[in-house]
Amino acid sequence: MSPGADRQTSRLKVFLTGASGKVGRVLAPAFRDAYELRTLYRRPEPDDPTAVLGDLQDRGKLQSLMEGMDVLVHLAAVSREAPFVEEIVPANIVGAYNIFEAAREAGVRRIVYASSCHVVGFVDARHTIDVRDPFQPETTYGVSKAFGEALGRYYHDHWEMEFVAIRIGWLLPYDHPDLRTSEFERLIWLSPGDAVSLFRLAIEKPGVGYAVVFGTSITSREILSLRSARDILGYEPQDDVVARYGPGPSEP
Image: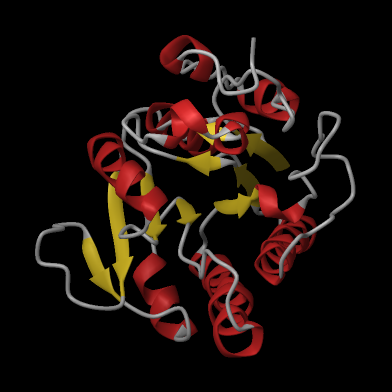
């Protein structure tokens, strides 16, 4: 079931949602160089030669757009706390089901899902949180991301699709001023370079089965454990927040 197992001489075909979002704007340029990429938009995107038009509410259209693809990378979501029934449910609950089911129907072999550290209670963490720790969502947005992880478990167990959920910390550009001043953001920072590396490993690593990993760079205190990302994907972050920006306000 590994997408790269029988494609040694050709590039993987990757279907990307949410290319215009904060994470997508980082990943899409690197993906265009590495893969046969198809990017989903709801509105015409003349500057993206890989763009196709569709909507998370139209499962039939999604299936036809994903025919022949190897991997779905699903980033599209309401990525903030918002009215649950009116905004989060259509995008993050119904939308996730529709695109996962369309991927199954189209024969896609792996789903890489952008989850969030908001599925666990990390804000006041006094110890390192492991992916095996129970869900403790802080927001209904976090609840919706926990649903996506559970949905991926269903598709893996019942349909033998490979699934990797990446619980993203806080993706910030290298020049963001908070990386020098905010202890909170420094503790869960995911750099653009490390984000590309982690998602590429999630796409390409053979034999992942079902996996959940946290995604951060090197921080002064690892409150979100990278053990699963290292053990399953071989991820080793390269960007170190202390080495790059110096000690934070409460760091020696």
